[in-house]
Length: 424
Image (cartoon, rainbow, N blue to C red; front, top):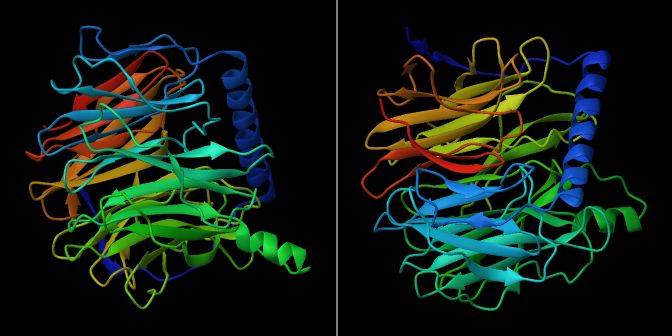
């Protein structure tokens, strides 16, 4: 059985969720956030044991591990996570079967480490190991974007620096880190400086804003902060990808008029670019869903989008669409999943094949990651296939790609970091 993406173009309709469903979703989100906060406060995250034999890095923890991974040009796997007040990095040279002892990237910092906000790792143009994270501030929902790099393969790291340049004790959070084909390093994040200005002036302001900072020397220095767009959702992560000419493309949940929280994409060209709406779910909800989207860009410029919505009557669900004109029009969104609650999509392009993964919550209390693939650039898809299962408390899934175009699932739960091949 295959799944076909609609060939027609998708334009806006209008769908709103009922008040009852909205209240249900908000209650779940608030309850989950409070539970995670309590668990992280009451139960320390344990100590990574990177040297243990077997396919997984073991972690004696009561809550799920929050781990981000990346491969370098030699297919060495780098993984970062927050452990107590430290950002730690460990490496694997055998595809995740065994790991080095952890290296401390930063210490003595209150680090954001939950599903949407997590330390990030990327590899620079000369093999530099680049790490970003959010340091929590004293007040609730405040923080700074932090960055450090290694020029010796992750053995030592530079002193951390703060990337947001306004010096204000406000919200700068949910950082996204990427490296363009030409080696340009891009950091994007959600920033509340414009909300603060509007509030001080007695003006209304919905959501937050997306800001970026760019480094053209492999992370040694960053240019000034640049605002990309006002009115982003406050707590959904930003997806980032690059065109072949190294132009960054960002995709995020946006606060649209009427309290609708759908998605927009923007190509960060020299003239600042123009944000375009992707999909028309019309999810009207006065809360942040903590549910960021996924993005992949093919060498010929086709954009692939995947996102979650709770809008009725189609949601809650994950949807996929692609665009050949930089998001101005898209294919009709394809619903992903088969009745189970699906969320947290992830995309990867490798070896001429497109991969889409997502997480599902099942009736028996377990979670699973499913994948499907397309050999015709998103027009038709293979049947979904389960590649990993875990208990109820698992992390977001991520598809990662090696130099040799192998696609693997990176997924964590309270005990393990799982690195799982997804090829048929």
